[in-house]
Length: 335
Image: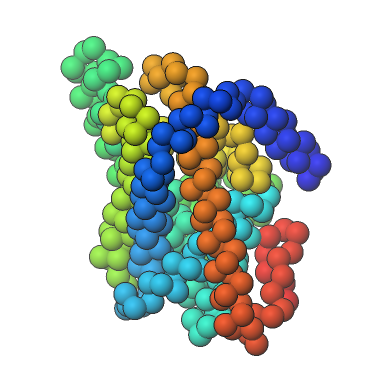
């Protein structure tokens, strides 16, 4: 299986490199100059929102003094998620391990990582619904159809809230019912885990209801900051684009990255995703999608390097506790 993954990655990389006009790329990057730093700053803001959301996912009193530690560990985990074929499994596992080795309760941290991840997906769906609401008028000419569609989207959002936060664990019950109808073995295997996750979210909602709203709000801001990155890059490339269009790109490419997460670094996936969505927005300049992709790769490499350096410094500082860390082939921590 790993050879198939490596082959797909290599093919996507070769296709991407083949389509680059290197003279145009160097010219455009040279013209941008110091403006590239803005991409790093915007991504920093997005990651801070993500870090704060994780901190509020813990069923304990929030302490801003721990922001630095959580930020560093989160970036270590995210760097591993991007570069490891097991994706978020390895990244989330190392977050739990590193935090537990500096005094945090393992169970509590593990629950916070799971809750943060589930609410990230939930917040993503909210952003998708938000985008669809604004696109209704462009899709339907009838006002009545637009209103009905809007009501349906609001109903979907309300259903998502109930599935996650209802005391009767509706998410688990729904998936259990699907299993009974389909006999899907994969779902049967993971039903106990899904039930535990559903309980964790309900427990946090009951104990600290304000935290749930704060987490969702921060994660929505995380996606908006991601859209701002697209908006900023395209604006400095003199492409006239609305923030809603940039948000649509962020939603679309995020979905592609999630589906193709097994490809290390999603090499080629995001690049061709950028090309596709820019063409959907009538951006026909062939050089734009390449520059957008390169700038986002520069940002990604910067944060991977930050995660690597942070890991070395973090483990050196806590060498007595962390000197036996190792990632298994399935992405989980072994000692």
